[in-house]
Length: 69
Image (cartoon, rainbow, N blue to C red):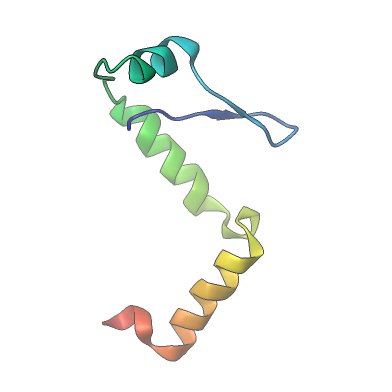
């Protein structure tokens, strides 16, 4: 949807109020390509911060060769 939250130290997500209101009212929201790219870079930088069940699933795919298809 083009909305990227800010993750607070408590683990909660902080959403831009104006963008959320625009989306809820049906108005188009312009995606900020730089913010989205930075978000995915942060996520890829440290996979250990992801949920354990997703790490286990990714490991299973790598060891089974499923990801190579």
